[in-house]
Image (cartoon, rainbow over all chains, first blue to last red; front, top):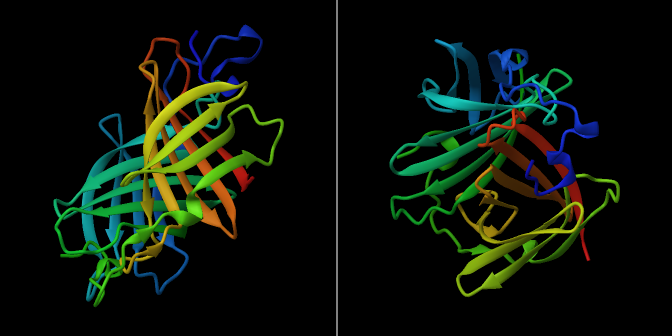
Length: 134
Length: 127
């Protein structure tokens, strides 16, 4: 079994769980703890026909901006766990690419976004970190 | 165009200054089973990332993309990079927090080993 760090190797030669990570611990609607957020204000994590999906909403006036639904990847805490505790997803808006990466801990979802503009507007690529509750 | 209010264009954006990220970063946790150290270096217009996995496995160099805190630009506060080893792909996503570099690795196996995709976090200090 190939690896690039010790964490990639199942301990004691145990058999891995099969490769599927169950996203259900993360499913639901998550709201930004900062009600004045100018970033992502809501996240919907759901399973659709067996596929894990994310729907994000950005801060906007008068209503939040619906980013639509995109495929997501669920991550466990180790190669031997099948319980989802982190998620990643990518949005391509044409003028902007946003990579969303989040992990859950103690009932809170911590979201990092990595945002790169492609429209020549001169806007800098920027990072954000936001917190969410169900 | 914007996807959220924080996308609104500034009057004038500065280039991203990657210097806060550059250097050799060592893991605080000597018992980590993930990444032991990483180096970020300027290579022309690019930033090269080199990672050493535990125990002493050289991942080679890949390009790291810096991010500022806002669309105004200025000092880098984060970076993203990716490694594709064939059997596993790893997104390396990191941010600075008071001179502490927090590095998250999102790993997805592409082989038939049955290993779960997994998330790992480590904290690094500048040598």
